Image (cartoon, rainbow, N blue to C red):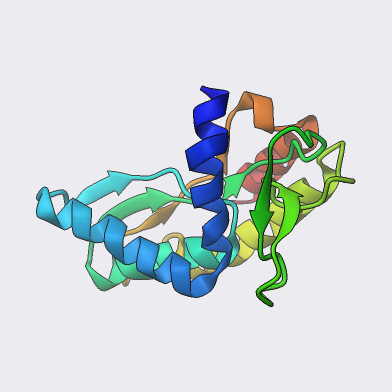
Length: 162
């Protein structure tokens, strides 16, 4: 599984750092849903705030009932699975861990948890319990192996607040 994730999934997800790519990706996703007649979805997202925002915008534009949220990944210290990513959107690809901070030095996940919490709050204010849309925000840590204790605490903090 990890080889497949490294070869395909992580690379595909990393492209969503680019807002234009994320916008096209959201349109493709909702086109596929529309072709199959799907009008409601619970969707696992990515770790990039702007990409998740584009996802919500597209769902709302199409009046699709969608539950999603910013993906929380905080295990940044694992340099075994880096991605090549345009962190500064300047055309230069650099190696980075696929976590919210994009920083190999974030070995305890504290920076990722703080970034995820900050970005999630922005998205919640924009997209959760908004009477003019059908989408809802979900607190979404990725999975146990990519969530440090700091990320789980950030999830708890967010849940208690909202």
